[in-house]
Length: 131
Image (cartoon, rainbow, N blue to C red; front, side, top):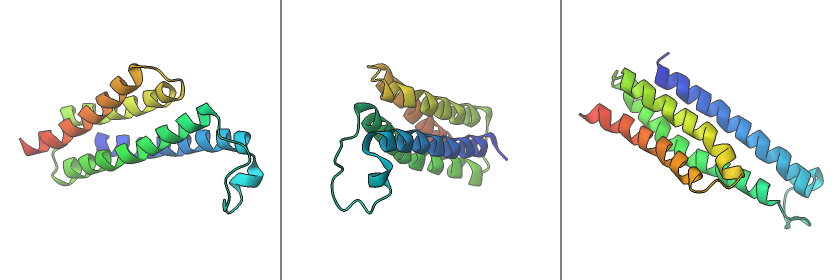
């Protein structure tokens, strides 16, 4: 397996961990009665600020994972895996791991800088296949 595919697999596991963190916090906030229901009504208790941030970080990773997956597919299918693309893939992964606490604890401007590092690494992977 290429390093880029390994990073993608680890990013998928990170997504599962993020979902677990959010789900745990949400269950503590609104209770399992609501989270296991059909959710036809608004919860009687609001999500905490932390749960809201964990949810937004999770959603942001879903969005970033789409572009990163595209980058990995392009690199892999074009057989252009290099040390550069592998490094970019791991920069993306490290940035996504760091993004979770950065978002959860409101690190400014760190959160945005961490996000940009992952985004830039992903773009550079794609660009490197075209040159």
